[in-house]
Length: 479
Image (tube, rainbow, N blue to C red):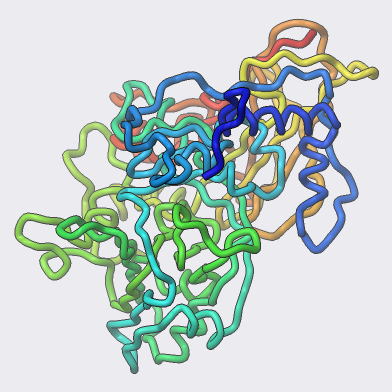
């Protein structure tokens, strides 16, 4: 590893300096967008005011304090912060980190150095040549596939997909809930390339009929620990899901699932299992004694007990062998059929990227400030984004700008704002093609909500899936 710079600058300092230079050169959102390999040239791009004061990363402490083992040495190699200078580290082991700056949401494609990391166990050290993915269960032929076979023996497809941790925004819940205290930054938009699962299922005679499931298992769990497992409905598996081995045109990094991960376009990150080593075709989700041991939820923990919407009054989530409503929103509104929604497709959401939090901006020569951000809606399209400069009292429609990278990518939006000098609360609100808009706030636990109602997102025990807009507001001073 190279010695530290003589001036004592950290990787984070150098990263921030680079972003500030890009802004000063007028190539913030616009320049980075134009540099993406999108297959088309944007017809319009936003311009960030060069005099804007850069947003500094949040100063709140991480949930765990790094130990001496995280200090970079010749033997240990670069620290997590050095490898990902655009992230705020929540815990160094297992590795959990989120985008540190709002500027991440002014670019169409999220670079690796700003793309969040969510691990339940430490990133494993894997030799690609030794890794296999097995296909078992209700198939004509069970098989162990090498990485070489996955890459060369099947078609290759690419999808642009917003990956978002289902706990993104958890820190905004009151009272506070347990787990990593994500703010706004556990989400990114990337290009994912790999093998379509439909090709694998068809080749080996999987039962792909209605009501079938595929349970995907990760290979990273230390001996004796629960296996990270998610049951995905066969309809979604066959529609557009991939076993991905590339991210943004390069091999996956270890922290993002090398050598292979599941990509379920439009669905929360908890479904996008990393380090996949087994796929099991079955006629139900993982549930019950077959998938548990006497004292351990070996395969069922992250399917049946976790990643569920559980209000304060419930001791645990009600478990189901199978369901036929997969949309997270629809499940949350259909509590007579599913008491505790499973976290599957993403709810409509938006984030302002510029101006940043607690920033001071100067108006351009024409008296305007350009507000830029990103919006997405899971399996649905984003139909509308509105921006408010008075904390949600009044709204103005924003415009999308090209390119549009498909149904599962986020859309960049901008709003040309004409403010007078003063202090403002900026917030964005997105609406999907079904007419569903972001709610304003998070409910109180005592309201016992299970779905979105009365413009409130339901407080839940693990702080999952929040898309309320007011917790994501930014305070801005205009000079």
